[in-house]
Length: 89
Ligand code: SF4
Image (cartoon, rainbow, N blue to C red; front, top):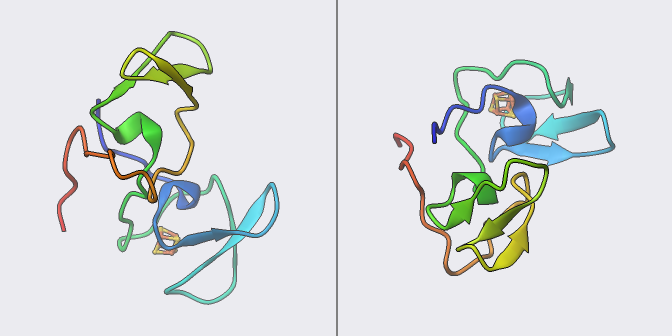
């Protein structure tokens, strides 16, 4: 799976404010969540980017084929998270 995630809501610097908007920890002002990312983009850890995530073809996948997992679920506190494709630092 590709690590490409070109919108703000998939960036580790993005802070969700409501369903459509958020703020950036680096830049000022509000952002539209699904608008294109900037040059500082770095992917947030999410289940779909983890080597244990298994796509089930629908909106819900699994972790290791066992536990249900939403692909867009933030996984920065998961101690088992491992990048499927490590992003460039
Ligand atoms: S660093 Fe760039 S891509 Fe990431 S949230 Fe801020 S403006 Fe968006």
